[in-house]
Image 1 (cartoon, one colour):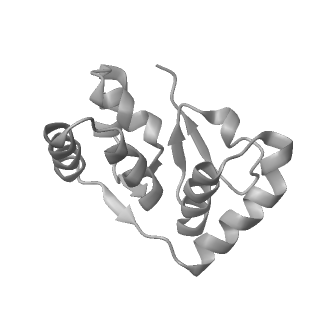
Image 2 (cartoon, rainbow, N blue to C red; image 1 turned 45 degrees about the vertical axis):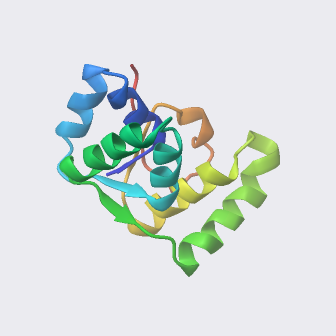
Length: 125
C-alpha cells in the first residue's frame, strides 16, 4: 500500500488511529513526492531527523519516479487538473500507486476519486 502525505502527518501529530492504520499495513510504501512533502514540513533539523527516523523505523519503501510514472502523472493532470482541481503532487502520487499496482491510503479521497485505475483506501480521522 502507498500512503499519502496526510496519513504520515496524522501519525506525526499523534493520531493513534492513523498510527494503527500504518502499523497494520503489511507493506508500506511512499512515493518520492510524499517523502519530499513530509520532510518539507519539518521546522528544524530535529524535526527533520525525527521524520526521517520515523520513515525508516516504520519500514516504508521509497518508490522513485520513472518515465512511466511521469507520463501517467502528466495525463492525470491534463485530464483532472481543471475539472477536479488535481495538483501536481496528487497526480504524481496517484501515478506512482497505479504504476506499481498498489492501493493508495489517503484521507483526501476527493483529490483522487476521478481516477478510475486507482484503488483508494480512505482514512477517516
